Length: 491
Image (cartoon, rainbow, N blue to C red; front, side):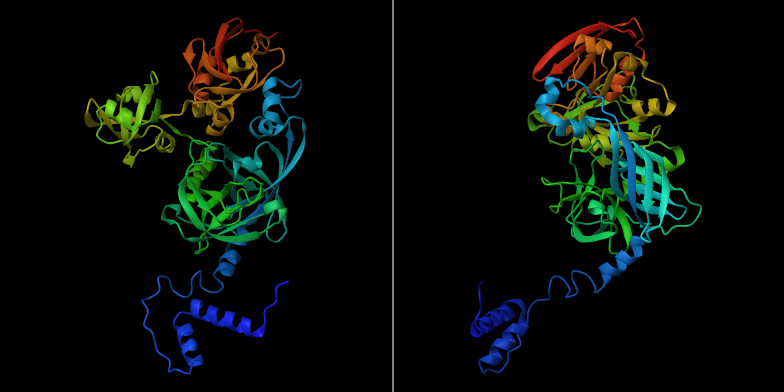
């Protein structure tokens, strides 16, 4: 134990006064020496004395928003496509990796917790798509402890947003939605949710950064905050000091599973767009350009005669796509899209995806050592069209494969150099692909000698396949490439 003598404590207090009190400390020190006090003029402080916030502001904001925040309890049946003998792929990566990317290894009843926020008095609420994914039952609990059943109006996995409707004819307190474009780094915010099931927990922090890309999907554009966010906070609101929702909490960066002061929220302006489409259409229609692009390095910029390392390089143009019809070519450097500067492939992917299909946009590009502008009419992303029209990928069923996009995180885990292709999540026992030797973890690069850039390409290539057709796949397994061939049949 450390003890302080009275004299020592007095000296410490004097030091604290001098260091911490500015002019007041100087006056106290002068008086103790028996000297007349001297007023020292200092420059105006950078921030007012009321910082961090005016007294009781946190309390007032929390009181205004908490009635609109709901605790979400879900029940789901987890069925694993990976049940059965473990492959070398499964043995190598272990159950945690498989659970994270391909689902739980056994069938069981799973209960989970999350948060949501009511945004319409009729009982419409926003939450994360992953909170309600696969849920057979959804129950919400209000700040007053009242319980209501809820149904999913629509969910969008790419943005991780879902819209719920509470099953009650009454009126509910609803939160006000703000403008996330006006949020600045350093702004105070509150996060409200149910971390670890502790309902109506309020934490405070600031906006730490904007526009964060964390590899969660094609539309990463997160607000970063140091307000404590933990498991169970997902889907809850991030609120400014005006009591407006400026984000939906969705993810944390943590090695322990708990908060380390790095949390991420979906900007509310993006959430508004997704919310509107899910409410009116039940699905989200996204723009499609039809190009494969890569970062523009300084060496590539010099090779193409560009003076600046600005934009993204078009590697390939999909045949029959809006890009081809609009005149885009391989080797073009896209610098601006619809008035937005493009610096990275994710910038372009996000800008195109958030563009309304059928809209004509200006694309500024560099070609043949000169800048030019062309107009392209944006199409609708093929996978979204197919999903809305309900056209089954019959060939996929015949193949007996469950495939998923290759996300940046999966690419890192598997040691891939790109996210091109699709990853095999599961193989149906006895299906043609299983008999031919296709394994979970294989990356499909080609179908019948046609390149597979992503899930949309794969779906398109297998859609027309039918029983009796001959199929050849080019696979990447680890660092090796191999072809497999088989005839489709139903056993």
